[in-house]
Length: 404
Ligand code: 7XF
Image (cartoon, rainbow, N blue to C red; front, side, top):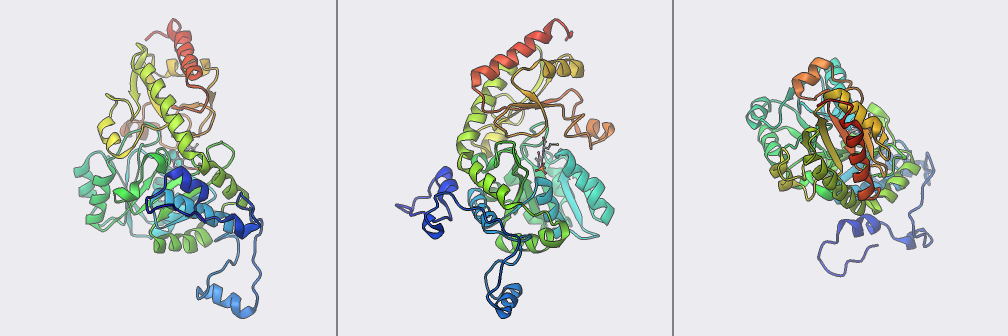
């Protein structure tokens, strides 16, 4: 057990490394074990029945709970400042298990218009098929949110949003949700609990793709939901157990636990390099638009810095030569890989319109402001100077070839 020396709350790295685990309970094993078991033996039929009834604590079967997963849930909930957590097999698993649990036919969800492409698809193609009303609203327009909220069961948004890093004011929007009696859900994948804790700003639930920064090494898929213990229990027993079955593998839970130990270190370094790249782009004549929440002068900087402690690892921008220049730039990069996903050690660059946001039709992208020439870069953990050189060289390589 972690023994605090005082009542002072320990920092996120200390808690991510120690919380909830006592090596003495596992033969002194410093690293928490991986429980590779799908089922659990009961001492008696009566004991099994009591666990099933919820009269007694215990494990039953790996689809709802596993001790390795349980430790991870405890640590992520703690980092987010939430009562309880649930870890599942992917970010989409977490979002769908949560929404399938909370919503029924006839209910309405109000969501921001800028969402990860498959969250957009889950709402507009999935939930709508089962009789859930879906309203997409510009969550930067607080009057529009206040008009749409009454009668809604859920208000849902991402901040910074995928792909264009639009920042939504968490306290204001969760306040509107509370007054309307709606459940507010924030996707905190891009910021991580190191930079931003939506629960402390009034959110009811936070979801994550743990595939990204929480895992941190591009070697797994996992998802998270955190919030009040009774709501998380309901999502586990309904959304996970039979609505999706999106169970996380024990070994994957182990890898995310390993990732969490360096989360704070990594997120600081990602933010440091991303700011340096944003500064380079801001001064470059070939750039037509730039979004980086940590950059003074960037759209949303003031709101972002009111709720985030740094700008995070993603940069989104457009080149003056539009789509053709963007493609040439991405193909000219040497260190950065052309790949979707984010939060890995490797720098990744992708084209949202044809990749992560292809589920938005061309007309929907135009209506919601996802530009066809937008480039999204997930700045990795390579040395900052090398990344700067890579971006500068790629911009230099295309400057005579594609006219601005
Ligand atoms: O199911 P996943 O673990 O891939 O997570 C889904 C998801 C949920 N929320 C946000 C804000 C996300 O960005 C994602 C996944 N996004 C990746 C990306 O944008 O690159 C997916 C690659 S197609």
